[in-house]
Amino acid sequence: MKITISEARKRLPELVRQVKKDRGTTVQITVRDEVVAELRAALPEPEPGAAARKLLEVMGKLPKARGSKTDISSRVKEHLYGGSRGSR
Image 1 (cartoon, rainbow, N blue to C red):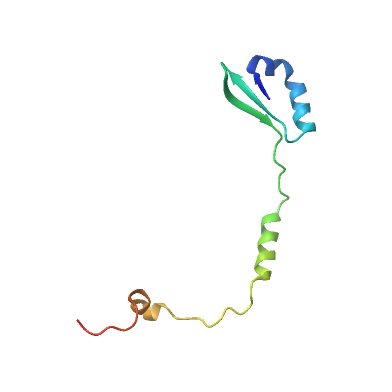
Image 2: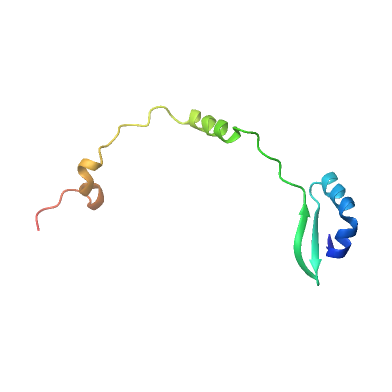
């Protein structure tokens, strides 16, 4: 819904109740037919620690054994440029 800024001033409490009731509603506020602001429901805040719990859950699903490790630093040129080369 689009309304002018002067109409939004008059109806702000009603608009806030409407947005609170129907979280999908967005009210666009216009000045001289240009949308300059939107009134919509706030996104729910995640509970504290939710990201850390999700990360631990994902890490728990990873395989425990990841195969043999390769010491890349001792053979960096081989990894960068391919197998051993003859002298130039």
